[in-house]
Amino acid sequence: MASLKVACVVTLVCMALVGAPMVQGAITCGRVVGALSPCIPYLRMGGVPTAGCCNGVRSLNAAAATTADRRTACGCLKSAAQSIAGISPTYSQSLPGRCGVNLPYKFSISTDCSTIKP
Image 1 (tube, rainbow, N blue to C red):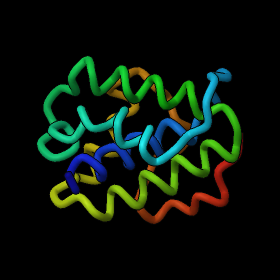
Image 2: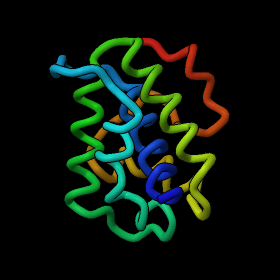
Image 3: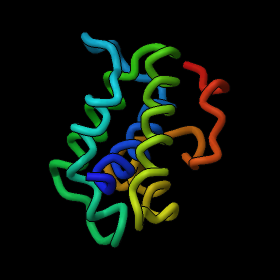
């Protein structure tokens, strides 16, 4: 369970940091964890992210439509990343790109979520 949270957190933060089209529904930590749970194996061992993982990454990127949503997602991702053992910072930073999502900067657990902008 802890591994699922970390993976979700890392991926969502990456997606939340990018401007995205408006999608109904506010970002919640539950939504972040649920969307990114398929990414945990990739975040721990690398390889190729699954289609389910990349679908989650893309949907969260699209759902993070406002600055508030992106900051919330960032906080959720950081919390999850700190609670799941074995998550690789290298794989976390590469996940958005591997799923075709471009971010203007790399995600890290040291990211200051309050500086995230649209």
